[in-house]
Image (cartoon, rainbow, N blue to C red):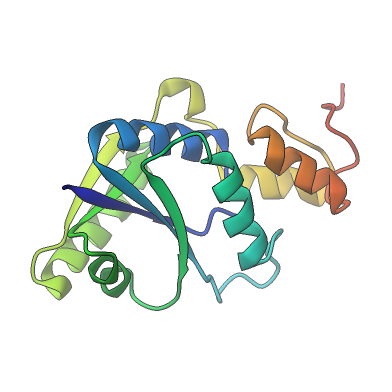
Length: 167
C-alpha cells in the first residue's frame, strides 16, 4: 500500500489544496494530510484545532484521506505515518525553486524520503492561503478560493463580513 503525506499549515485550506488532495487520493492508496503547528506565524486566522476540523470536514467525502496535526520535522512525521513519500503542489516557478531545495534536503536528511510534485490545475494557480489571509485583513471574503465550510467558519468568527464578494 502506497501512502503519501501532504503537509502544510492550511491557514486556511483553499480550493487549490482540496484539488491537490483529491488528485493525490486518486494516485495513492492513502493520503495523510499533515497540518503543521506553525509557530512562526504570529497571527494565524485559525487555531490548529480549527484547521484540523475544517480539513476533516472538507475531506469527509474522500475515503482514503486522513488528517493529522504535527510539530517538528516533516521527515519525522512522514516516518511516523509509515510513509516514505511527500506530495507538494507547484503553482509557479518560484514554488519549484523553493520546493526542490526542501525536497533535496529532506531526502538527504531522511536517508531516502521522496517528494512528488503535482502541477496545480491552472484554474487554481492564483489561489493561495496568503491571498485569502490578505483579503481577510480587510474583511473581504473570497468565496471562490476556499471550500464552503471554511468560508462559513470565516464568517462565523467575524474574520469576513459576508460570503459575498464586494463589487
